[in-house]
Image (cartoon, one colour):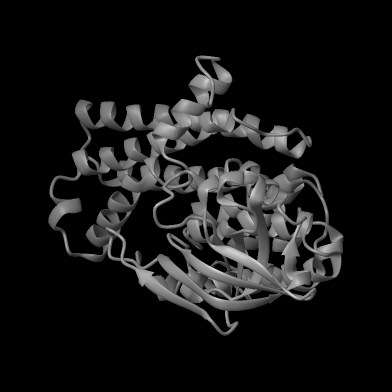
Length: 377
């Protein structure tokens, strides 16, 4: 299906099923409510086939450009039907399984993720490693030919307490081998020895968690990619995280700016503040559109996506800074449902310069790899 037809038919269907898809709670809702809503919406979309467009037929999809599924995510975000940050985990993890898992395993589990039957998480970050992913220490050791045993800890693992599976990076070589001694596994979260401790974020939600692995036995056929090939798995996520996920976030931010316009004062100061935020958003959207098309054309995405990451953090800050300036006291003291929603989102927006690679790291990448202003060493 071509994009124009897909977009028209999708929005016609969403309009017709608006009552069925509408959340049963007032925003922002609890994390439990948001997760339940997302999984319910995914199930409805899977039954109606919409969430299958853009995915390969070998994993239960209907084929077509990856931009079709990106358009779906953006439409859901713009209609407040699913939190884009939670929904976009599909884009982060499903392509990894398709590219690196045994074909039979991918065919079995990807439809379960798309249909809302399962949630997966990403076990990458560790305490003490900061943004230096290559220094991770969670270790996997072979036990015979058919099993690996994993010991260690992960942190900042989104939705781990809700997840059925984890795409996990482990150390299988010496630590000084850095990115050359890392292997990825697909771990069932109900395996004995896996324990999860949710972490409270600044907005009171428990989206992140620590995950502990204590002698966790994983079948050897759950290895993703090659032994010591985990860095390639990790890097494969980057193009989707910096393209499809951002596109959905942009749609969400546009919707928030529209809501701000509805309640902001009708004066020159408000026009300037909103106008500045709109310019940031528009610049981000223009940049992201180019990235979307490059990905759909099969081009390799690399260091240049650090520009997208800097722009999305800048636009997110600008949008919620505008809300705080034009709605005095709402973010800080308004305990109504509307005030709670603005406060929660404002506080979450402060993390935009940290998650997915800090702004400092992204600017270093831009300076060194794109502007040739020094080596990475």
